[in-house]
Length: 107
Image 1 (cartoon, one colour):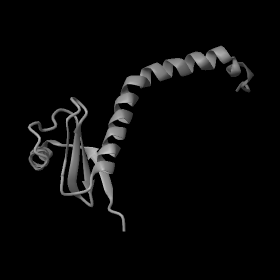
Image 2 (image 1 turned 90 degrees about the vertical axis):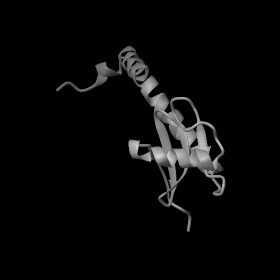
Image 3 (image 1 turned 90 degrees about the horizontal axis):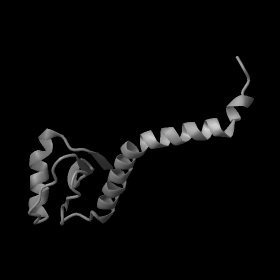
Image 4 (image 1 turned 180 degrees about the vertical axis):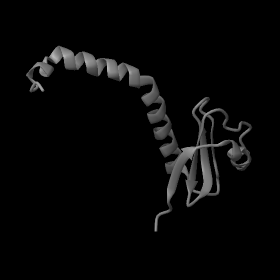
């Protein structure tokens, strides 16, 4: 059976976990700021700082796919916040310029 993968935002009480992962990974840097934490069956195995890009992972667990998932999730979260206003403006312009709204039934 495949392990359950959970990706979540790290909380204040995860600070020790992040330090432990950095130690296992022999990383001089601990992920700081806004951090995503990946767990396999509830065990923390990798983390990614969305603030500065620092990544750490447990070297005793196969985590390449998990780190890739952290990257994808981070880009999605960052892209969503940066693009949401621009996307809304484009959608509004597109909607009004297409004149489709004129063909809607009036209520």
